Length: 538
Image 1 (tube, one colour):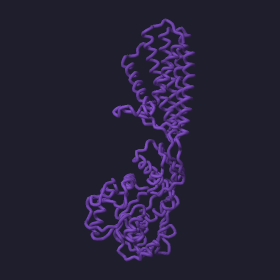
Image 2: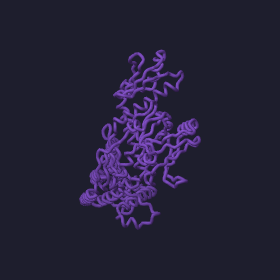
Image 3: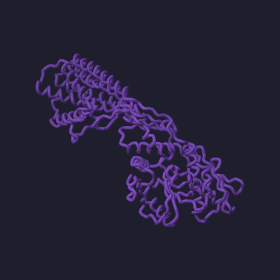
Image 4: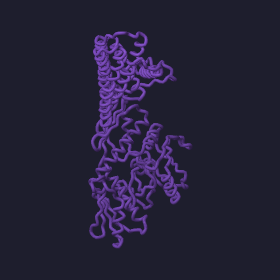
């Protein structure tokens, strides 16, 4: 027991000192922290929505619009497959009505080839045995492509999963600390942002699909009245102008080609900047390699023709292509303020939402309940700790004092570890903290009882302490490993408050084992070296 080398003493002392220093900023009042020089790091424990207040938003995916997007995208792929691959297959009567795509093949000899090309574009859905699209030949020359139920379910699942990550990226871009973003059911996303009292700007950002497209303007003359009723010439599609652009163009709609030149999927960067000629806020965008190639090819082949920039289904502008754009960069202009241009840049950088999201629930949580919860949690922690400290002192004397020191250090180390990791403290986390404090002395109880047993067997004090720590460690580590496994499962499968509880629980288990075994052993070792007692009272 006396063999506790100096390097271990230094290691334990430094670890405890660093942990305590990390915990101090979170315990100081805000006005005191404000007086600390900025060069001194101040890691703080983030408070969850239930403690600090904030905004709770429930988003729901628009399944109907997702189905329409899939249908439109598949129709475009079908037309490309028939016209771009050799030999080309002439088709006609393309229809998207009734939630399906239908068309007829003009040459009956090419019917089988057309069927094979379309089937090659479908994919199997997991292990269901079904494919995402059903392809059938009807009326001898007509092919009908229908989205399968399994394919739609898989598309919804993928879209909501991607949308969850896009929402998380957008909120992170705003610099918000520790938001909770989780899926709820098959088509909903829960967003909780601590400390955000005005959620309107956040809702506007999260609700923006940020679907950016560049399309050529249809060259076939179109009737403005028909366009206003979403009726466009064959091969074209009617799009509305933004309010500002409509006032300038003195028209509400414009006819654009169905084929997309370049889309927002091919962006690698978007930044708010200023137009050097007008000094108006704009958004500079940069395409990836494929987007650069496609944009350059489209502008080379259509010099002198107008093209449109469409954002979330509205035309921002439709300028002429004066010369080929070869550098993979473009500029989005409109009636932007600096704030709206920056929000658009964030939305484009984070990626477009694969499905439209609508707000179905919104509420603001005040911090009053959180302050009361913290106050009650602190009171519970103080009362519980005081009772445990008194019990250990009365029961084990000097060794109880060592356990009490370990208990106090354990509480500080838990706070320090949470501050270092940037963990979020929630109301269940406070419960986990109090539970950890209450259970932290379990290891010392086991150790002290083992020492008592060894003393009753007639062992000398040094040997009794040595055997007590040695024999107790196996039981301590086994018990706490199972608790860590349980905490890890809670963290892995849980969400929100459950994760907060699991984080505090796992940190508390690790620190309690360290303080109960290593710290108390160091204190006992130093006591034995100085006093070398011939008998022990424990």
